[in-house]
Every structure is written in structure tokens, then in C-alpha cells.
Length: 368
Image (cartoon, rainbow, N blue to C red; front, side, top):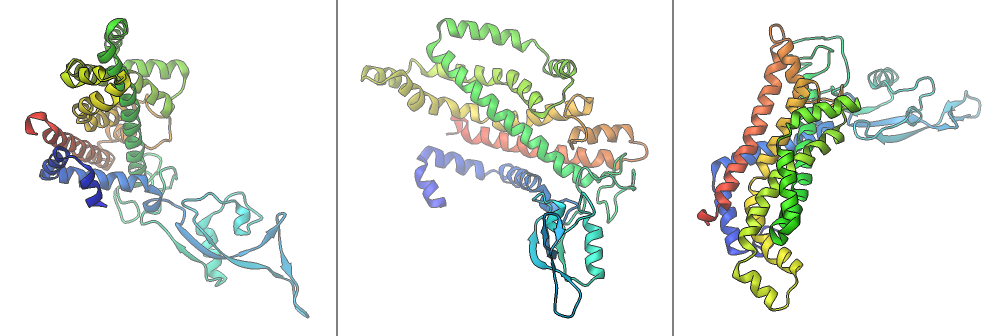
């Protein structure tokens, strides 16, 4: 597979990626970033109060009643069957476990009852047996073998909230980057290539939008709509962040649109769209893509600041900014609430910025 990919790359691209992976900061940043990305995206496998796997001899229910079998000369017995469940990953109803006297499945109680009856039930839990929403009686407890990074003011496990919070932050940053880059590249290449009235109007609108403080706008809209929705906040950030991407793309296209190779394509009968997507875009997009890690970093930082100020995502959504706010509030008697999210935020942003610097070095035209 690697040989196939390598053969598909041009000599210049191979040289750039060789320079990229030849930098220690690139490798270190990539390892840290991928570790945090993979762990956060698979958070249910590492931190959840439900089991990952349950193999149980479960009573069979029909229309809410346990199916009974009657043996000759004996009392009726429950009809059971061995079933495999994945409670941390799949939502099950109580009937799936043969429960008729409850609305939710209390797994610790269920497993304890099965063990007392010697049913041979097998359960495998994640290494951290907490999820970010469960409140325990251990309020503001320091790090221990039960709560690795302690608990917050509501008794929620900090480790679980941090893992899930990093996922929220990374998803926000990646979605913001993809949305802002799509809009910015599309508008920027249209401005730079066709110029004229559209370019003039777009530049004036961008100048107007650039004077709007993004944080104040998000706070204002969230306050007016009385909503702290993930997607509303994301849409507002994308609506303003594409401007810088568009300006970068416009500058690259303006430098390429009058080059000899573009005019030659038009002279040979090529369409404008062929010139844009076949010749200009591949040459103009590379310098813009080197800014990708910094854009993701900016999205993560923006969400953290909003959550810290209390105008980000609605409670009880786990987030790094919300943990930082609690850490500042209880810094005198619960310092772990500040240390854990601060360390995670520093590692995440530094790893992303290291990747950005390495990409810029590798893809800098002067280095190629």
C-alpha cells in the first residue's frame, strides 16, 4: 500500500513528505495528536460505566412476559438463551435482559444478582469505569485508584469528562476547518480568477466582517436565541473564519491566473473550469493547506474560551473549557481540576502547532 501511494506521488511531493517526516517535531507532534485523536474518538472503549461486553444467560420475553417451560412432574422454569451484549456501544431495552420490574438496567446490581445465582455471566468493563455524566457521592475528591484525575464539583469523573471533552474539541476544530476551508477556497478562487464586480463586493463584505469580534458575536447570538448548540456555535465560527482562508486563496490565484501555462490552456480551447481545477487549484492550494493545523488549533481554542466564559456548549456537555472554569473556581482546594485540562490543552495545541510548523517547512517553495 505504501509503495502504491509512493508511486502515485510526484517527485516533488515525495521530497516534501520526506522532509516532513524527517523532522523530529513532525513525528512527535503526529504521535501525540494521533494518540489523543484515537483515544477520544473511541472514548466509549476506554471510559464508560456500562460494560463493553456482557455474555449472559437471559430469560426470554414474549409481550413483556417471561416464557416458561414445564417439565413433567416439576415446577415451571424460565426459558433462557445465551446472548452477547455490548452495552457501552449499543442502547438496549430492559426487555433484552429479561427485566420486567424496572425501566433501566442497573448493571452492577444485575451482575451481582447473576453472580449470587451462579449464572455464569461474563462482563468486561472499560479500564475507567465512569462516563462523563454519571454523578457519584465522591464530590471534589482528589486523584485515586477509583478516580484517576479526581472528581469535579458534581462528583463526575474528571478523566471521563476530559477524554470526552477532547473529542468534542477535536470534532469542533476539524468540522470548523473543513467548513471554513471549503467556503474560503471556493470564494477565494472565484474572486482571484474572475475578479471584476464579484471580487470588489466580496472584498468590501470581508472588510466589514473582519471588524466584528467573533467572540462577542457568538455570545450575542447565543444570548438572543437562548441556545448553546454545538452546531449553531460551529456555524457562526465558520461564517467568519472562512474570510482569512479566502484572502489567502485569492492572493495565490491572482499570482497564477496570468501565468503562461493558464493562457496556453485557454488558447488550446480549454475551459475556464479546466484551468481552475486542473492547473490553478493544485498549485494554489498547497500554501493554504499548510495553514490547516493552525486553523484546527484556532477552532479548539475558540471553543475552549467560549466554554470557559460560559457561552459555549450547554451543560452537561463535557468540554475542556468547562473543566478549566471549574479549575479556576476551586483552585485553592481542588487543584487537580485545573492541572488535568490545562495539561491536555497544552499537549493538544503544541502537537498541532508542531505539525503546522513541520508542514510549512516541508511545503515552503523555497525549501523545494
